Image (cartoon, rainbow, N blue to C red; front, top):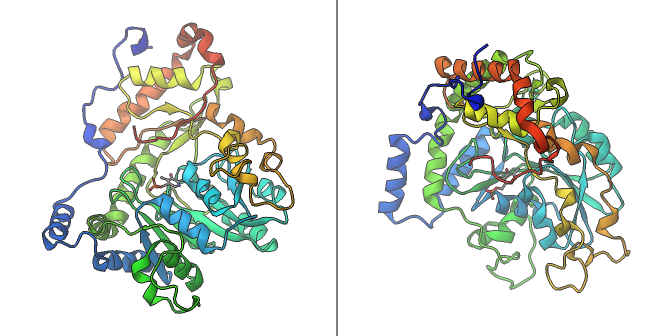
Length: 442
Ligand SMILES: *Cc1c(COP(=O)(O)O)cnc(C)c1O
């Protein structure tokens, strides 16, 4: 048994191949596409953006795609598009990035959080249903950490109760659930395309749908220059070309140009990542304390493997904390292991007792004439509350270079085999609760 690097031994990983993690992969085609926009003086037009949207829509075989300046903006527009407004509740899984739902507050709605499933880490259909009230208008389903949510079960609940469905695909562009692309199950898909995500164009977002009314409402909300093209929305006489949300959500065309190139190379890049990540997962199969986070359904995948994690069971390792486990791997020379995932949002005061807009009461309650209070709507969410102790982020390999990945696999085996020696270092650490974080990329 070789000695752990944390205790003075030789690190298991000797490679200095940091190209394994570099993202996005910048090609000469991307560079010249950006320069062309720059030299053409067309950064703020929409011609290139419209081409990018057409490509994105064709990829998803849907009728409309509308590019946005960020994923936050695309989701905001999706919420407006499905009619979320004053007095409405939006159900959202507690464990996700804040931009899956926080924008609802600016529409006069409130967010009601439901629990996640311990295995998929996505919205739990039973908890979703339990949180529906007569005020519920919509649900946002997040394909979390690149894992598809259980769309059959979730759509059944949503349809039974007549709810609108927004899919947040920010972690899983191009991912499949039972052979079908994520974002095409609900009423509207929306995602981030910022540079940390699998489909990376800089800063940007996309909204896509088959529903013309949702599409046109999203235009009305944040794309004033396109209002003249509306067909089905009937606007009052003389309101003109003003964005009803008061937002300008247009995408910068340098990002659109990058997006057009990404559309060409995304499939091959994600296939390479998938190969690398599956090789890594196979290499640690059966190791105590570690279990893969991967869809169980046929023809389902993690596509680009954004922010991937594994399940972590400290009790199989004599209580070794996820934090110390990750520190030991870092000492072995591994990049990318970090304890936990996002903060559970249901514990954030913003959603139930902060007066954001000067309403004289919590903004989440300001538009509810029935006297209902946001603080009473969510309740206990046991899985979300403890999930940060239960998951560990894993390295995001962009290339299937097995000689490098093998060193990482050896590092895990080494740490697990010698884990008892780490327990002595643990002390107070073990009781420290992992709280969560917002960033996965640094
Ligand atoms: C990144 C992200 C967003 C927001 O996207 P931005 O482009 O950063 O505004 C929304 N939802 C989820 C789940 C995300 O990870």
